[in-house]
Length: 432
Image (cartoon, rainbow, N blue to C red; front, side, top):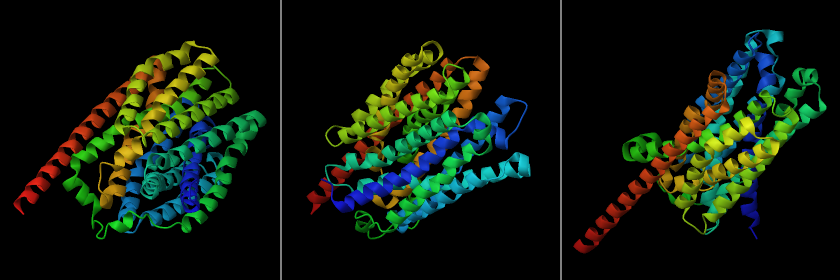
């Protein structure tokens, strides 16, 4: 059994991740509806592209959040960063639910929407990374892989709740009702989760490993770029498949299959819920397996599987019936899940404790800003130009090869550094 104090840690990080990704999921899934409210246009594609553009803006500000909360986390503690980021996340989520639309206040409506997305991006920049770092540092020895996955599990649960919520809205509300008030309900309800998460986090203890570092880095960013530049660059690139695969699988594919008329809106989000559940199970299994097997090998299994499955999955979206689509997207979900499960332990093993929060947060959020947030936008553009979703498979393949190269480079780099340190220790001992 898990100690009561450890259960509180798991619950706090789980709830924070659920809130964070519930909001992002709802925004992504309701893109066609939100587009009509804030970016009305006679050109439907242009309206949707603009809404995806605002989706991307939130990601572009994540690195700023990573810098801000990375500094707080490395200098003042993990708990402090998590409490502040959780509070900051709750404000724009609620505000989106009450924003007047374009018909009411004109161009000010999309401007306010962009402002809310910027605030969310900043808070998420510190929230997610802080959660899995805190989980690993506070985890039970020998079970750190199990502990680390609860940030990603919370992410999947948030997406699942978002998918179920949108599916229910599409099932029980008319198109007019969904456009007039229905789309606001998920954002308004998100405030309940944020209050609970904030309350639990306020009473958490600080990371035990954080207290070990007697002298924190005065300028984590300066230390990262002067002492660990290669590690930082490779770490940023190693998350490429996570960023691209996740947002293609869980934002682009559901909306695209519905837009193609392959399935109804309600069934589309039902399929997506199944995909998310499979992804969550794969994350949990692969992360827990890291407590018993080599985390790098598990990571590579996921990356190579993404390469092999890319074209079959997007072929299935164009030509298979519903059952075949579920099967193929489910296989891709397993592959992507195996890329997420080992990721926290792998990244944490690269950087020392005093710059860990800043380095991992900035690496992860730069990758998401450059690749994740722009992925649905680029995928929609490619599909509209090429007339087929099969071209989108190239995005997964390129991202997977980039990740594969970066992981192998990091393994080689860290092995070389360890060998040098051991040699220096041997020489030092020999001279005494």
